[in-house]
Amino acid sequence: MHPLPPHLFDEIVHKALASDLRRDILVSLSKGEKYLSELAKEIKRKPQTVDFHLKLLEEIGIIEGSWKEGKKTYRIKDKKIIEFLQERKSIPPEYRPKPPHEIILDMWQDMKKRLDKIEKQLEEINRKV
Image (cartoon, rainbow, N blue to C red; front, side):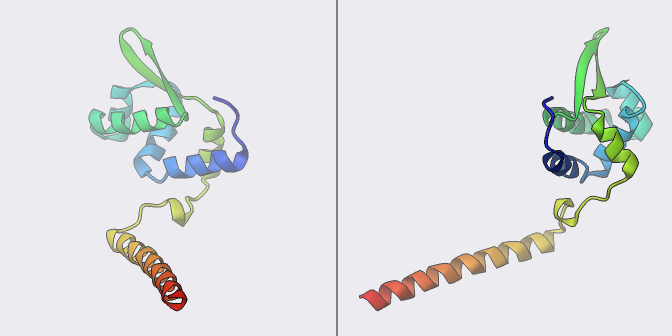
């Protein structure tokens, strides 16, 4: 993984850690390399659920998997994540999942801004005509 600027690294990590499950996975992996089955047992989740989150963490480059004895093991790729977890940095509100009613309110505000903009453009067109 190419070294990322600190602000970009923090942004990616905040997004990845918006899930308590992904935090649990990373805390577990900070203790050492593990198989999917070991992780699932340790954090008391179904292997399918853990696998989904492992793929996401692998895709963004925080962990990596390698095959050993016909099984895939996972480990933390960038040790900065361990420091991040140890510092227990809080996740900024903008990266936390929003409840449905807040998503709808945000959507409405965005729609209102767009409609206001269209209305102003129509008024400007009418003045020119």
